[in-house]
Image (cartoon, rainbow, N blue to C red; front, side):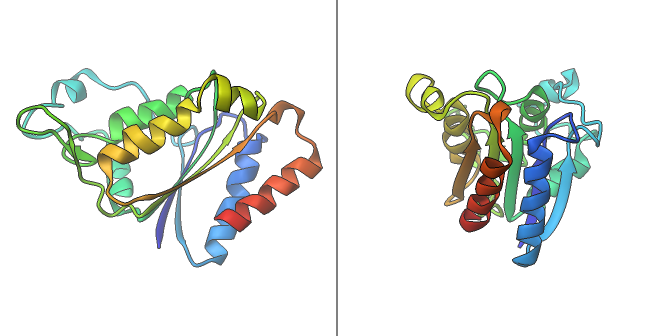
Length: 193
């Protein structure tokens, strides 16, 4: 299975990088064909450009700066997103990747009457998410109602894919991570993925 792993964290010694290394090793051993996209190392520009936004409703989206990234997404059968949850949202770099790469004509089509958009990522069969949070689990679940999970599962995948499997693993209280908790999370990751 062709698998695109998108890593988003500016620090190379972060838990996200560690979880990425472990995920890539695990999925490679299972036979996945991995393409790793580190948004920071690739110098990805997250800001949607004026000409890109102008072309959202044109006959063709201006993908002139994004051909490689869009092609990676279109070829992926499996997508793995690894990132920190900051302020109960996506890092700007990852949000920009969604804004720019999940583009009309590639990830979805606009309806002629500007109604519900139509999914185009038919190739995407599964999405696996690994995220770290500084907060405890109950704040994310009971107070904020898991906003990141909702956006990923309902807004992005619900609009751009059909029948795509979704799994999300969250590592809470990451700033107080003991070696034992990290190892237990990696074992959980391997069992689930």
